[in-house]
Length: 215
Image (cartoon, rainbow, N blue to C red; front, side, top):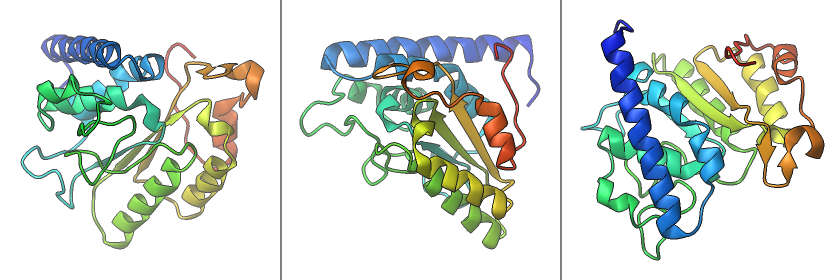
């Protein structure tokens, strides 16, 4: 698929819809994490509407690309994206965090179409993504695994154990994305427990690192 002006406009429109739905979801629930959800909208839009191979008619297709939202508290962004993609009815978004709702505070792979991994306990998502990527290589599958980490989340030691494992097993079908918004619940990550320089740390663990244009 060629990236052209028409496609960029379409992606921009979808990103706006996703942001609008995130704000409405959190407002109606009077609960949730809007900041950490809004900061990953552009990335999710690119992944689900341009980059990833996902089959709306078969959300469990074994050849699909996988996405792991390790920072599971940012679930409004994932839910709104899945709704925009067609996996979830948009009416469900209004029930976010309601009792007996399909869409609770953290993603549940057993209940929600399009969710590849149940997440919420910070620091664990990359380990799960490693397992998916390793399984793909062992099964000689061509799918890719994308894992979204929070920059506050990477203060967890398990992240670096998983990073070491990913490098050791040469998981070149794994893409790790760090949402570097510099905020966590206790304040700025640089003041709480600074993980900087993030890029150099991942490079030291054997990753090829790409930085966005604002870095």
